[in-house]
Image 1 (tube, one colour):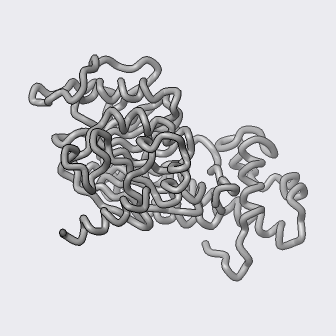
Image 2 (cartoon, one colour; image 1 turned 135 degrees about the vertical axis):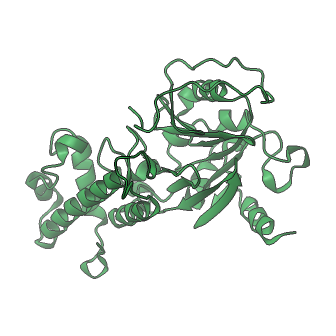
Image 3 (cartoon, rainbow, N blue to C red; image 1 turned 45 degrees about the horizontal axis):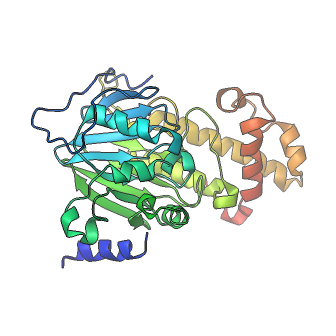
Length: 337
């Protein structure tokens, strides 16, 4: 058995989106050569908007977070399944793009709004070699890939068909629909279950909750999230994304799909990272002076950013962000930029 399949088998045994200027929304009818895998009408799903951002990549909005669908000759590859309440609509939206089976489902985290539709989408899919079983997932369902942290949390659910069948400790790479796809674990950022997905030929980077252009980062302290992990993850995303230089007047560069909101580019990741670091440093300075959390909140360390990312300063997302930073600040000796 090749080494790659051995490693995959070991991992399996552990149980474990408005849009880009580059393209306008466009319906994509199934090709005549497509072989329908399911009997379903190819109609847009009510409430779900599908926007093509690259030739073979679509973003579905309306099911909670952005859901990404990449289609090609080998089937559909989906990043995040949305919440459970919209799972049937998400599936219908995917079927309006292609009747080929869903082959792989990548989860960027374990939150219910990102992975709540796993069961419905996986059961509507079909793994490669399903008649053989073995290392490519359970027969009759799509392969679900998630970080180790997400796999551990999702496997506590009631239905095993919605559990990840492949877990990622650091990085896993796949070759699907004529391109490399990387799944990279980034634990201790939003939570202990984060992962990002990079479509290398399409040059699309899906960030999950690590990056949300509509609000401050949500750092889930109760589930392993921490401010330094968030900054580390944002720095890694900046390194993965390629800016549209030197020909900035032409379409190009890595398209960054955040958890919510419009499609972004690398420069917006940089701005977001800088905001997080500035707010972190303000809070650290106050904490080093012996200020309590209440005193820090009253000092309004998100000034200049709250209107854009958190509404009224001092409460709501702004207060939650400040609180999470305060609670998870590393000792000065361990602080990183």
